[in-house]
Length: 507
Image (cartoon, rainbow, N blue to C red):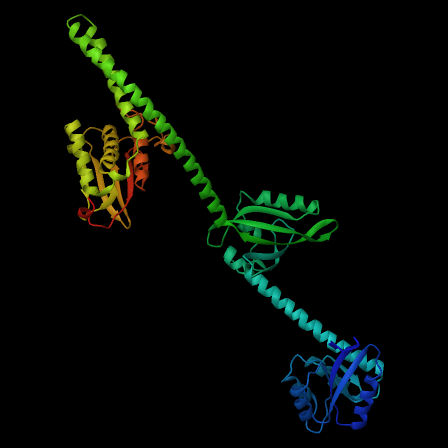
């Protein structure tokens, strides 16, 4: 509905009536409406009316159902075919009111009985028809917008009864992706929303909703659900009570969104920050330890030299050799500890990294152990892939990793029981596992096994596995330890990024 130059509402009317006298009367009625100006185009045939409809901007049509070229309800149907959104007011005789009611069912906005028309009745009917049609269009547009919004929500909107099982009267389509249940499962399908809330969170969710409702506030919370396929998700929900019965909230409306990705990202960030703090702490400790070790080694060397000189000078005196032997053993242990502290404080330099073959590193490591402790090689069974497995690493540091792990495994293995060493390619990784048949690792010790001084192998310094983890991490890899089964030993697995280049081309 437009306005003319004077600000008066303008309604453009298409009048289709074959009786000229009736048409003139209707036009006169429409000329007497204050505040509204009707601009009328008249057609005495349906065909003429359809032609005008194509050429003119029309707000409403006044239609006689019985015309020379069309009769009955078919007249209305034919008029609405090219303009289904056009509001139509039907003209009918006194005896045809049943037909008029049927016309309303076919889409007419109103009907007027000929002979009872005056300016007030006709003008009001046309204004109401236009306004009603406008409101219907606005409602349809709003419903489409709401449907689009609901379908694009990153979660599900809902309306439910405020009862412990949260029975749903409405859920949006997003519930299928969120919960893996269909809307019908919740709305009369036998699934209460409370069934999918994690059991540990059910009481808290109920309590928080009731507490917020009692204060007349919106509720907002995070909790976990289990989907139809058993997947756990973390969701965020916000809603409020929208209806009350006897002072008690009876109906709730709100939205539920999956925030699992965000929660996982936050956890990963927290873990990364914690790892960074640990790394920075270890780096600082390593630098201090390296400095201390360097300063301590000189006095240790002096003590060892003096004890050896005393041994020669006091040779033959009763009890002296035992005391000196004890001093020299403690000096050896302290020297080994200082060596490990220096290793912690002195990570591999970039120039030490070359392309090396894991099989060769393992063979060299076993050779080092054999030179140090004859018979070591016989205690190990090597199962190495025939395919060359190249990594980008510092061969000396990697040998230190495998020497430490092999020493641990051999020291805990029962006599005569072999240590198994297996190396295999695994996609972009090389996996090296070392398994023994010893007593296994204490469950209390496992979480901190690679921390400094967490464990003490007989003859060790307590830093061996901490050094292993540091070196493996510097190579972009991981190391993991676990028990095979009660009483059947433990397995250490080192994973290193595999390098595809020819090992001979990057030496």
